Length: 233
Ligand SMILES: C[S@@+](CC[C@H](N)C(=O)[O-])C[C@H]1O[C@@H](n2cnc3c(N)ncnc32)[C@H](O)[C@@H]1O
Image (cartoon, rainbow, N blue to C red; front, side):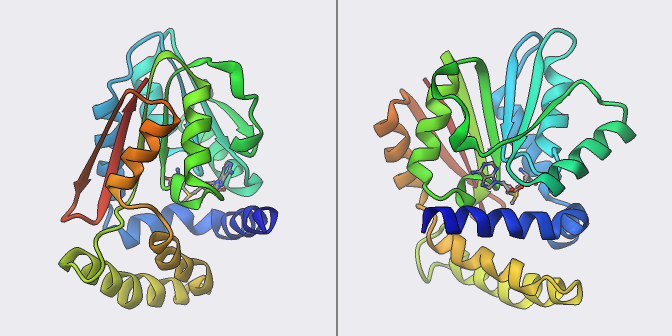
């Protein structure tokens, strides 16, 4: 079952890799970039730190992190889908940001006790993991003793709240029909189900504390449509 979901997610992101950035910008009206920037700003990475962008996809967060940690720090972008990582590498070549290490790996297979990162961030990755709590635990174990982490994803709002209704209308009437034009409606229909299975903000906080984080804060942005989880060891 677990293996099946991992392979399904990998297949989706390999399939959509070349349209991913374009559709992301189109479907978020270009706003996803500012939400990612907000996440990185909240985490305050500084020169000399070592950061990882887990589930990096086409690398947006990796590029933002790099601007903050250079000249002495490092950024590693990790994703399990080969094709989407290839897009990240192509982008890095185009903008001559070849300092990022790109690793094709399932995050659950990274050696747990490396404790090498000062910071870890993830955008739209946590919701796609086979097990959210295990994902938080993995991040905890990969962070150095004073490490911090941040996650951006869709917010799972209370059922039948205005935010929930708006989200469903947006996904059903905008996202799925537009992705249909690109023959990717099946892949994008998956978002609604994945949000439904994704914990609400207060549960994410409880999970983060359970796996060992000392500080956990959750805030919503863009009319409660997106959520940002900030954690400190
Ligand atoms: C929605 S995309 C997000 C990409 C990018 N972070 C962004 O915000 O645009 C989710 C990514 O998570 C990756 N992913 C899902 N499960 C993973 C896992 N267990 N290990 C590594 N990557 C994973 C997928 O391959 C995909 O590229």
